[in-house]
Image (cartoon, rainbow, N blue to C red; front, side, top):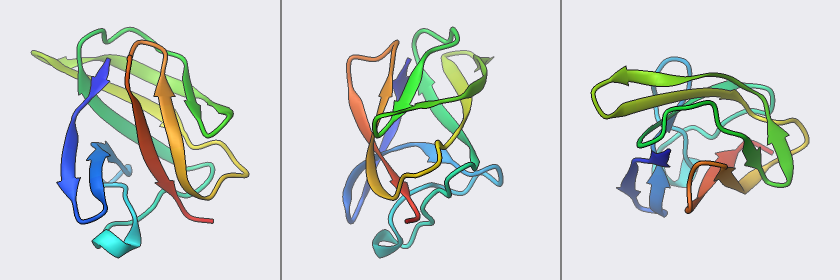
Length: 104
């Protein structure tokens, strides 16, 4: 799965949302960072099978992955604890790395 991205004042960010569907990102861009332990939703396309995910150097628990519309993959995961600031987000089914903003 490759995540969709959008342009923000802080650069290109992946489309990852909170449970209320608001975008995750840095407060400096007018967005809300994720909280450790929070469930998030990653939106992308491609292989919608259950991936392995890491945030920073910690494994993220993935609790749903599937195709929710034609060409649209949804992956729900929990933010690992002990992280803060910008953290690298890696998905086993992606060749790209992304940045996930987390409240310290």
